[in-house]
Length: 132
Image 1: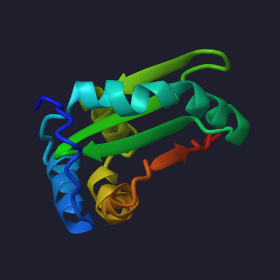
Image 2: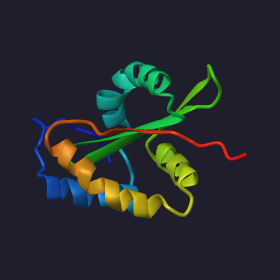
Image 3: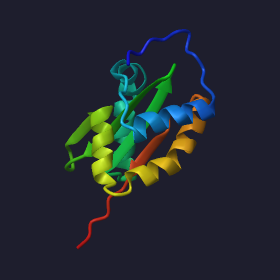
Image 4: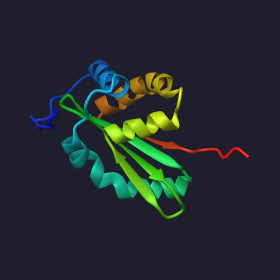
């Protein structure tokens, strides 16, 4: 998919929900150009938020004109941050939510779609519990 800004076609929440389901559940392709255009510039802000909230991971999804992009930020160590983009982000989240990814996404996608339809980018922090 190639991200093209055609006067930004607006999709309603149901259409966005269907699109997110195809991309996030059925593993369809994501748009790198959309990541560059809408998500990349927010990385530093999100990294600061992760530190403040003590999140282990943070992910965000966006949609524009039928294209979808995703980013997952991972705090690998105290000072090391790794950024996963689009398909790599989806695969990393699947590994984190092993056995629960689809169920979690089916709950989250309607919320994401509603936020995106309002022009908001859904951002979600994940805290990982250490089991002793």
